[in-house]
Length: 292
Image 1 (cartoon, rainbow, N blue to C red):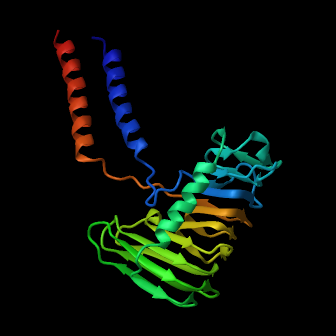
Image 2: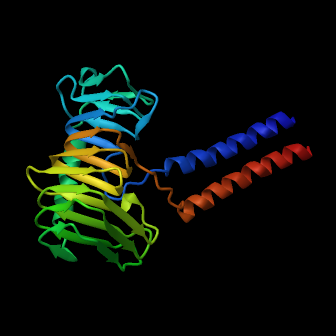
């Protein structure tokens, strides 16, 4: 067998490894769709940047049906754009996306948002607060097996000065659910994650029928998902935002950059064994043909 063919077979084997791992790269801890930004009614992105600067590192979509329900200008979306019909997307002179334009009904995504929000809101709370305003907080999940720690805030969540909310997990699989019955207006907030958990493990679930969610100020640090199926959500000002945004009407502007850092879970033992046996088999075939 020629050395070129051997190298080609090795490349195929390594490609298989890459494909397997890439398929497991993004993990959503709460079952939401594969979007970084989604608005069931509309999404407006106008970041004051340009078409070569990424402001959303992932897929963007809307269930809106009116022309321009998804408006993008002065920003590049590093992912797919999903809309009901092509006219829904309105690209400004400095708007762009790197993936594909996907068209079709988005009712499944919208229904899933409401279903997940309702399920999270019905969880038995570990802690109930009347409000969560202008204070430092530490939430500790002592589970070592991927347990869920639930905080119910019956009123509003607000910060107007620098504060830190720390989420400390007992294992990297632990989850935190913060159910908020009122508005969520967070400025100058630093979210700290401990215990190996990622932004995929924390969700702020706004349960109100009509509310406002806003995260802003350049000295903020955000990690987590915002889920607000019946509310307007705005993310503005340049700051570190690692997570996802699901709302009714979503606005991203004034230099905000939303990056949804994918997690890379360890492959299941069966997958590892299957992968290993496949590579061993390929290596054996190559070795036998070389001996001949």
